[in-house]
Image (tube, rainbow, N blue to C red; front, side, top):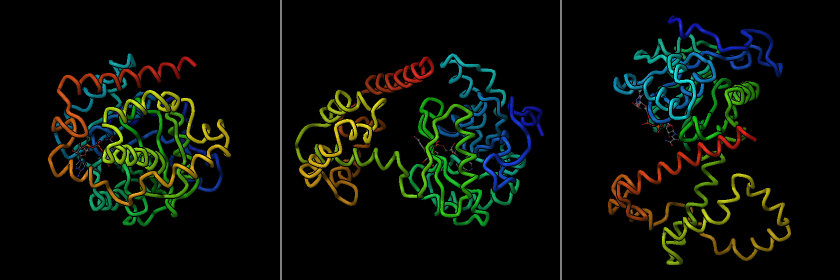
Length: 333
Ligand SMILES: NC(=O)c1ccc[n+]([C@@H]2O[C@H](COP(=O)([O-])OP(=O)(O)OC[C@H]3O[C@@H](n4cnc5c(N)ncnc54)[C@H](O)[C@@H]3O)[C@@H](O)[C@H]2O)c1
């Protein structure tokens, strides 16, 4: 075992009864501090960064040698850009061997390809390779966790943790229970995430898209429908969102807003507008057509709109600066 990995997170008790009672052997309840991450890509390196910055030793496994070779530098660069302790990157240990990465782990986060069969096979292997007490978590974007964990016999310790990109800047992590997940395991994961500075949200039922992506894609469906129907162009949809309710969203969620204006007014609005809102059960034909035409968005230079390289870079920089400013405002509040 490497010395970095042997280290304990500061201020953690090593053993003791589970804080919620019940599953006393649940690792996260004992102060899980040995983290393993499978996949060193966009999400995996960011998840590793969050735990390393919070003092945890993190082992990261990937099959791509270049992803492992660049891992620490990517984490250190992010930390430097955020004005945080870049030395924390030393707590991130790249591991070419899966068994070594998870051998002593208390919690394993999977952040590999978005492919059900691949994830099922991985978790079947993790069940055998990780300690019996280790919590097993998938970072899938939309695949039901129940399906992913179908190959795992110890389903009580398996759940979903849906992080958002970039994991070190977007606060939310959805914690998704399957019907087999031990409630104490999910609660302990929730508390672990809160301790490392995230904003966890418990998803009690394992539904496709969980909470955040269901809400997000309900909005995208209507946005596409408005463009397809010729109500406005794509740029106008985005202007309307950003210059109206988008302004309020960071402090006023939809149901807070409904209570603010009154449930009676909300009901009256829904009676008129809901029958007109797109309810197509599948992807929009307009979207299918864009993809068929090779209009894939920024990566092809055109999607709903055309994008020069400069415009893409400027938008990415604005998003990054906005997320940093929001976190700074949160910290100051
Ligand atoms: N990108 C996002 O915004 C986002 C947000 C939330 C959730 N997710 C989900 O997180 C997961 C990872 O997404 P990402 O964007 O980081 O993808 P990514 O392509 O950047 O990273 C995936 C990594 O997995 C590695 N990999 C491939 N096969 C492997 C194997 N057999 N063993 C170990 N590693 C292997 C790849 O080399 C790559 O480094 C996906 O399930 C994705 O749906 C992504």
